[in-house]
Image 1 (cartoon, one colour):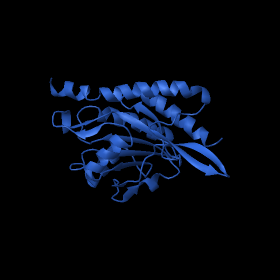
Image 2 (tube, helix red, strand yellow):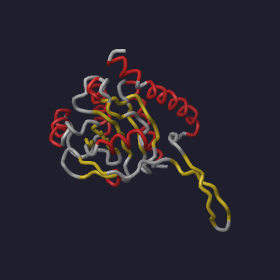
Image 3 (tube, helix red, strand yellow):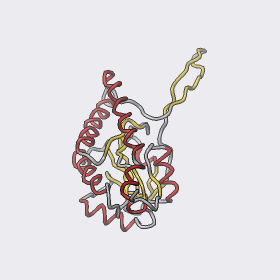
Image 4 (cartoon, one colour):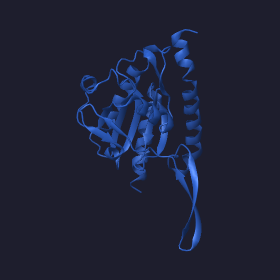
Length: 222
């Protein structure tokens, strides 16, 4: 199997996940609200003398990375924000250019909206320094702090990608560019819950994402 075939074979799990999310979204369409994705745990507690069981949903944990401006970015930076997360690297020879063209559409669509942000994690921090990320953002025409490009400890980036955002992000010498990752855009709500996962390499997938951002914004106005 050549390197390109190997790369796409390792992303089959991502394609399966996208399909599953689409089915889940369809099942929840009648409620008018986007589903909350990921694992959930039943927690029993006593409220006013009565036993109540609530569902505690998977959420994005705290993190500490560094932005293209050289400052620290944590989960608190995204407090009270709806945001779109993705994983990429600046020298990526395959899907990253498509992803950034599509995420630029999201940036332009919601530019200036104080409730919406974008968070792009490099999965090649050895190369993608603060200076490299800043130049990359400038070349995309990104200004301000609505779209942050972050770097940091490689293992922590890979861990949060796979275990929290539910996407593939790992080193692989057989993959183009030496890293394998999905083309997913992940929609996260103000409570740090994942509300959707989309194919960030296609116009249709990103059209769905932008529509769902509008739906999520509307939820907070109810």
